[in-house]
Length: 423
Image (cartoon, rainbow, N blue to C red; front, side):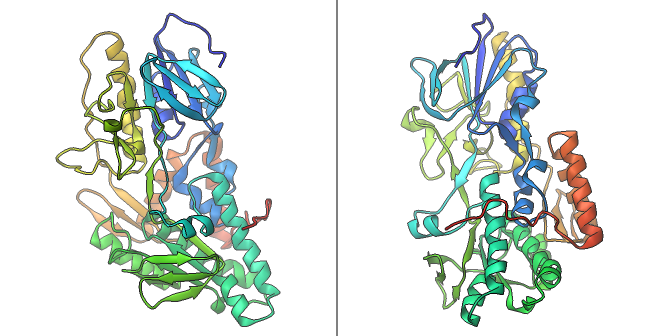
């Protein structure tokens, strides 16, 4: 892998998500060698992937080069590779470009889409976990508009203009709101030969309410916002099968749709090589202690979504969102420096800063410890926090410009089919 030999202890970080980059930043220019490995050469700001999918933003405004993040870190290195296996006995990591030894290993591989074993849905639905997947959804949505305009029958047109989103967590709710804005603002403007009332957005949720992780207040407000935008919400509804056209559910609901977007859950993305007790099978997440050490290993750590740290307050681990990953990455950096200097390390205590979701223009919900509110003020807070959380000043400027332009003109300027999608 051509990493310089050094007398400094080496920390290998697998994954350039929120956890990985915050750990790398906390170890910048310290007496330690850092090697960051990722299969992409960029960090993705996943909370805004849905805006790429719905033509609100271009992907370069939510992605940031990993090498640029560490360019001023004199003892930090990045390698573009896919990790294949961990060899804990040899203290090595095998990758697609070779192997590398480590003194400390940190696994920050995040999650992948969970299809719950349904192969038909896995083959025919659209996931949204990466930038390429978001671009696929954008292309498919726009291609369906074009095909609907030349459809020979109402039944065929119906399938192109029916959009089914499975999973009413923050991702599903935000995507449903964004697609409804395409229906209300873009379709009448760009497609004069299509009737916007023929376009339907269905949001399916297995629980008895939308936004199950958030408060009942946030759930109720979100459902009101969604219905005001024309989204059809179906709770207590599971998808049993999808063949690329027909959506079959556990109820009597059967729909024809060329687009089914799967936002119904995630599972961990572990790496083979560690012993069986390190992994919690059902969640595919590494079991870690309060210091993020993987069960059974002193020098192997897991942080972010891939780590499951059970506690009295979080029996099933911390929520798989950005804040726990950021906080774990920052603390682990400090703890690794203390370990190297034989000093006592601090346990992780999650500082819950609240949760939020946006449902379109002027509509959002925010859950804080003491306050719960929704509407324009919540939407403004959501925008500000997401804007400031983006990596890189350029990205913040581009996103702010796009949001301002979209708000003034009721427009989504990124509606381009750059790379046509084929099922």
